[in-house]
Each structure stands twice: as C-alpha cells, then as structure tokens.
Length: 49
Image 1 (cartoon, rainbow, N blue to C red):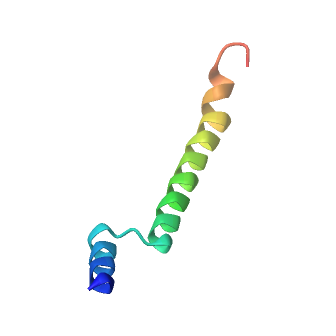
Image 2: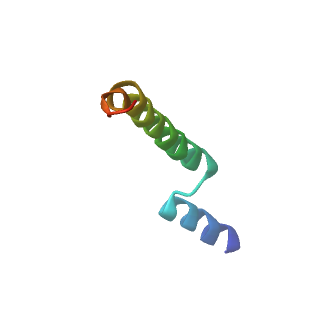
C-alpha cells in the first residue's frame, strides 16, 4: 500500500528529477537570452554607456 501511495503522488504532482531539471534548464536558458539581449542592444543605448 505504501508503494501505491508513492506512485500516485509521483504521477499526481509530476515531481521527478528529470522534469524538474528540464524545467529549470529552460528557465536558465530563457533568462540568459534576455540578459544577452539587454547587454547587446539596450545597454549601448543608455547615456554614458
């Protein structure tokens, strides 16, 4: 009965390590793209840059 509770919670919440790694990897890549865009195109437009 304990195994059924674990597998049910795992599928219910979807919290396995692979899914979390993919999600956080995508977040890091998106934030990196935003920072690159800001540094490449927006910062040179600022006065004093």
